[in-house]
Image 1: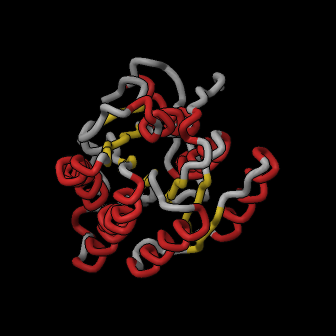
Image 2 (image 1 turned 45 degrees about the horizontal axis):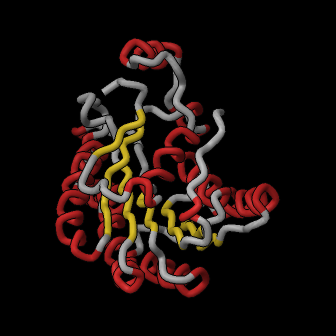
Length: 255
């Protein structure tokens, strides 16, 4: 991977990441810790997350704070945000990354399954933003990055509740950007393409699927989680201080 840019203003900044224990989230945790940020993250994968904490502590000399949490439990998520603020100071960077792209057919969706997909892929973003809002206001500003997906832009089928939720993310971003802009809080959407996490490779990557991806992308590459983290660093840092209410895409030109 290329040498990552250094953003001095991220040093000692309090960062909160949802789903920070694996995949893209683990790359975010590593990247922000390497910048010297005070990172806290929630995840449901306890063993994987604790292993990440140990690895990041060895790599950077600074252990992130892992807070076990199922983000479907909003009071637990709110308590985790409060714990992160108590441990690291007011959160001024929120990365709403956690999601689950489980495949499903439109015929099989029940009201309960629909509610569960929204409870994972959309609802926590609003309530995490709500939880950090008093902290960011105290600090005079902050950056919220909501993670979307190019799946709905590509008209992907086979997961309608997921693509519905992800399409709604930018609506949330645009509304929050307007409401929170007077407080100096920026809100943007980061849209990853098909990022080659271990989960994606294990569950969905086939020769035919990869051929379709490469045919669609302008750049004939496999996107790594670290390349998504690079854009997240920029959106969190003062370097993007005039950027809000926008979509930023890392998809090698597919969408």
